[in-house]
Picture 1 (cartoon, rainbow, N blue to C red):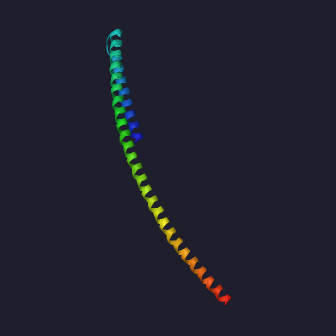
Picture 2 (picture 1 turned 60 degrees about the vertical axis):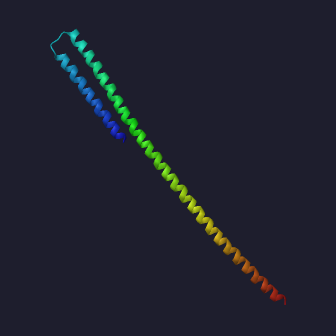
Length: 127
């Protein structure tokens, strides 16, 4: 995207420079009085400056619009990725908790069963 803006600016600068050079050369070779030629050159320079300012304004507006579009798209993507991440993290946390609860219950049941077996064997040894 930055290349497009640079290309557009380069083309614009080239066109304006070419136009300015053409006007200046045409006036310098025109068979007129020096004072009149300087007056025309000054007028044309002012016109070219105005055109450059206008073109700069247009290019600047295009750049602002593109920035706004890209910025909005990036915000949307961020929101989507953030939402997806939160959903995935919540699912993983829920799955881990369920697994922990499941295996904790099994461990408690197994430990209780082993304790009862040991107790029975100890009771059997007393008799």
